[in-house]
Image 1 (spheres, rainbow, N blue to C red):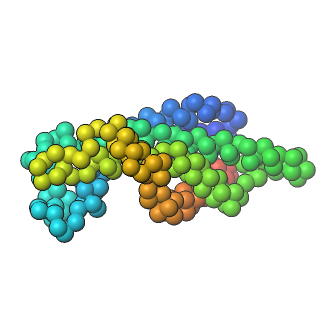
Image 2: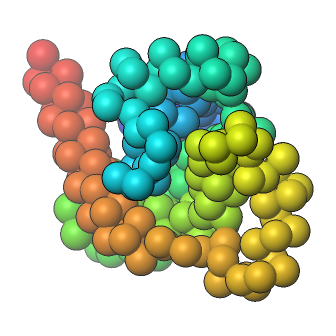
Image 3: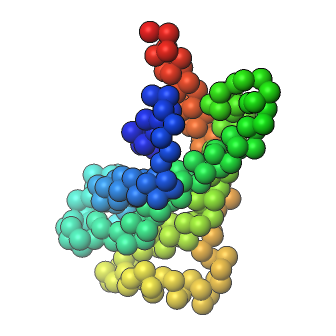
Length: 221
C-alpha cells in the first residue's frame, strides 16, 4: 500500500483521488515488485512441490537457484512472469475496493456526523476498518486467484527429461479447464482466505489508527 497515495488524510485536506489514480499507482508498484521477486517465487514454489522421491531434490534455496541456472538458464527464473504481472491487479483491486468501500461507509454514517458534529474521519472505528480490509481482500482474491494457480503450475520443475509439464499460460488454462473445470482454478483458495483475510484486516486497522495518531500529533504541534 502506498502511503503517498493518501496525503489528503495526513494533511487534513479534502482532495479526493479518483479510483483510476489508486488503480494506476498500485499497479505500478506491483509490477516492479513482481519483476524483482519472480525468481524467489519460482524457487519457493518448486521447493514446496518437490517430493522425497525426486531424482535430484533441491537441498535448499541456494542449491535450487544454482541448479535452475545450470540446467535451465536464467530465463527459467521468470517462468510464470505473465500471470505474475496479471496478479498486479490484485493489489490494485484491493486498494481501490478499500477506498471505495471506505467512502461508502463514511457516506452511510454521514447523517450522524451532522448530529454530533464529528468529522468524517472519526466516524469509522477499528471494527469498521477490519471489515473493510477483509472485504477488499476477499474481492481481490476471488478475482485474481486463478492467476496464482496458473503461475504455480507454470513454475513446476520440469520432468526428468527436462521437458516442462506446461508450455505456457494458455496451455495451463486449457488443461485445467479440460480436466478440472472451474474448480481447478480455485484449488487451495480456502487456506489462502484463512491466511490473508485476517492479515488484511489487521493491516488496515493498524494503518488507519497510525494515520489518526499522526494527524492528532500534527494538530497538537
